[in-house]
Structures are given as C-alpha cells and as structure tokens.
Length: 162
Image (tube, rainbow, N blue to C red; front, top):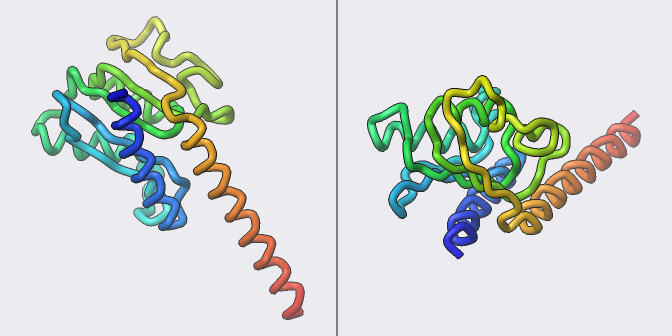
C-alpha cells in the first residue's frame, strides 16, 4: 500500500506539469518515510532539456540532504525512466525506483533496454513497475489527445484566415 500512496503524490505532480503544458510526468524521492524531493517535467518552461521529473526530484533531494548521494532512497515516477534519468539514479545511488506506466519509445528499464542490469554499472537499482500504471497511462493519453485536438484547431483556424 505504501508504494501506491507515494505514487499518488507523483501523479498529483504530473497533473501540475500537464496544467503547464508540459508532458505530465511527476516524481518524488522518499527516504525514511519522508518526501525529500519532488518534481515534474519542466523542460519547456525552464528551457532545460534535462528538467525531467526525476532529475528535478533528485536535485531537490540532494539539496535537502546536502549530499549528492541518496543511499536508501526510493524514487517514484509516473513513467518509465529514460536513459538520462536512469543514469542520474545510478550516479545518485538511488536504492529503488518505482514507476507507473511503461514508455515504449524511450523507456530503458524494460521497454527499450534493461539499463539497470548492465554489467558496467557500479551501482544496482532495484525496480518495481506498474504501480498505479493505469492512472498514469490515462493521464498521459488524455494530455496527448488534448494536444492533438489543439493542433488540429490551430490548423483549421489557419486555413480559415487564408
């Protein structure tokens, strides 16, 4: 039940991203039963391609603990991590990642690769997948559906003005 509780907070953060026209992905870092970092996707608003939810949450957690390492911490994220975020988890020594929906295009935990199983890594991250996956998946699907509808409306308006 605890994983679902923490993932619910990540889903709330993902909604914040969606309200700001960012892809709705949210993440939190939990250590000793407390949230020490949280974030949501913000690469557009921050003009920063590294401003993924996981990176934002890890940065905050490191600042709050005054340490660039997070041993014993669990990162909860609504979408399967990409290679950049998975690498950040290894470098920050996240103990465990729990994610919701899979990311068939760029997810590297199970979809496109099994990054955390790579023999060259000097740290292993335990993985739990599929926690509140349906909610996270619907959140993403609705966001992209809305975005497509908006683009279609803009095209129609452009045609009318010609």
